[in-house]
View 1 (cartoon, rainbow, N blue to C red):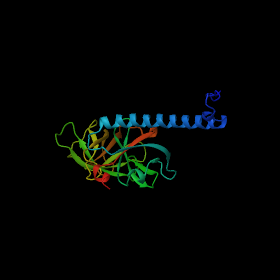
View 2 (tube, rainbow, N blue to C red; view 1 turned 45 degrees about the horizontal axis):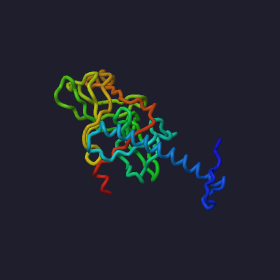
View 3 (tube, rainbow, N blue to C red; view 1 turned 30 degrees about the vertical axis):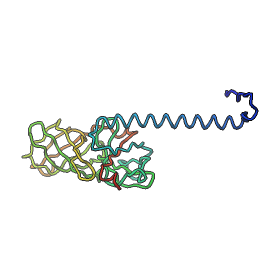
View 4 (spheres, one colour; view 1 turned 90 degrees about the vertical axis):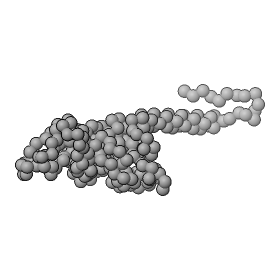
Length: 222
């Protein structure tokens, strides 16, 4: 239990039991808050150390729920008050890979649409093992756990193991950042002259707890 308040020699310095308990609670609340700040700082430092200097505007956020109407969308505890805006890219803080894009914001919260969502399409770079030239293309979610690259002609050689990056997007992404790797390359069922390519994201978004939103310098000047 709690020890009672000490009784100093000067009667003017004594405090009531009630006041003591109030101060004790305040102290412990502050201690927990300080530990949370320290934990956030350590997580953010870990992400920063793996991301180039262009991203001095990383905002660390926690996943606090999922959108009930969209299985591939999560809600985070940061929003417009922290300079988070629609279209910004979201990193996992564990693997430092792009996992989604901000779809909607309020002052205190934001919705992150995962790359696996069928409505999420982004421009990508495929870094190919057997071709020195990166291939700029589009990628969409498959509605499950992977992403798809469609409408790519078979003349373009893509192999299992080729790495896929989110492509540079002025104002949002200054350098390519990894998404995952090609896990399957099959002929398209409907169009045999095209590839049906599956991309497996680095991060298992089902286990996602902490993320970092990339806020480029363009937005910091607002």
